[in-house]
Length: 244
Image (cartoon, rainbow, N blue to C red):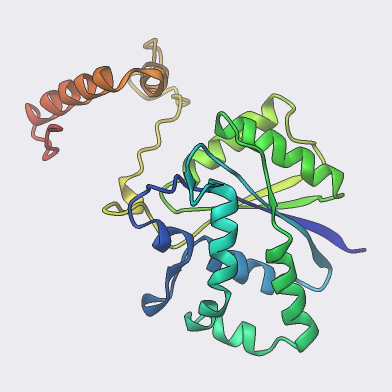
């Protein structure tokens, strides 16, 4: 029995710094971005798995009069030949027969661009619906290393609210690329307390509950909050610098 596989790619705002590195990768360093990771995952599927569809999100940004998702897809197609420049991908591409290479290229041409989504959970719900319509049971959610933890979190939220069909198995695949000027270890994961031997276990609200509303604050309040935290940490020996 063949398992149908779907791939979800999260698009990025077109003004994101080093956008092309995030979307393609850096061949000279053999660091895979979105497109290169997509190629690796598709070209290494086992014989009992078959690619059914690739879906890409679409945010608010535009370029050349087209949407974020459409522009990203166009960039993928224009740079297909560059996948040969990645040392890890070169042998995978070399072993493809003519029809197999044509099928891979067609899969990229057939990428489904989703409507603009207001948030990641909404995007996941739309993608899950598309995968259900295609009979997909296994989903590969590809995203940047520095964005993967949040995508996994939002995936679990969507599943908890029944927005993802229970028969769909989702896997988050992190690329080799982080946002420009950052490293994967710059990601901060704050989960609810769960151990009885931690001093703050019975203190409410916990840190995760306090931090959650931060992302809904206006920019001026975010800046004030970060400055306050940086000052607090600096007074206790942290090397973090307050924002400017």
